[in-house]
Length: 299
Image 1 (cartoon, helix red, strand yellow):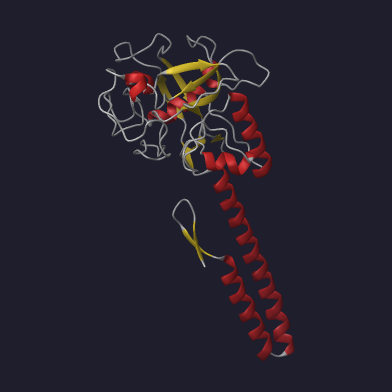
Image 2 (spheres, helix red, strand yellow):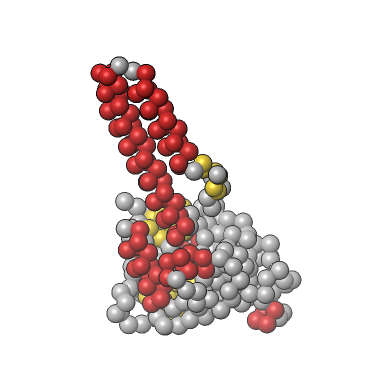
């Protein structure tokens, strides 16, 4: 039997390889003399153990892939966070300033309903249309509940991105309003539903609300849906003027104040899905237009 992983890599079932190895091992023992057979047996038992250990590691990795999805390594660097004064749609909370981030891994996609279901055993989403749609209607605290449980299962230290990490990754190394340029169309992202944006967004896409993750082209870093689809929680507190360096750190559960979310959604006009656009919500706020994605610090 052949199985196919999410990344498209075809893997034969491990038992085929193990069965062949066992059959070969016993055929050797059948014709060899006793001394040679003992030596061959010891050597091949060791090889078989190594083979089985490698298969177990692959199974663990595949299981983790099912829980967290594909991760992309984002190489750290410095950039101008925020927007220039002449950017169309700019808000007063987007003060441009220099920020540096370290290397980190980031989810290639927003966390899906399927991933949430596998970890939490439930689906809180308002729009339950399939496993490959983004999970939404989860508060900041509930996103942390998911991550805590995921970390116990995986033995890793996944978390939400800081606001600075999020914008750095979303820009994909670009300085424009959106990672692809300074204008937007429905070929680029899922935004501007009819009920929200009459007269503010030209044309329409095929989704009334959320779209399956990965429905649009990825940015230069290989990340999908950093503009539109659903807003994404960050771990940072929301400071409307970037005065206290909150964008580079994570808040604890007990810390008061708003939490920053990014990216805009299916229900927003073009200005709200720019890379620099930002918003703050209460830790317990839920919305059918708000989800999250994971990051993992490098080892």
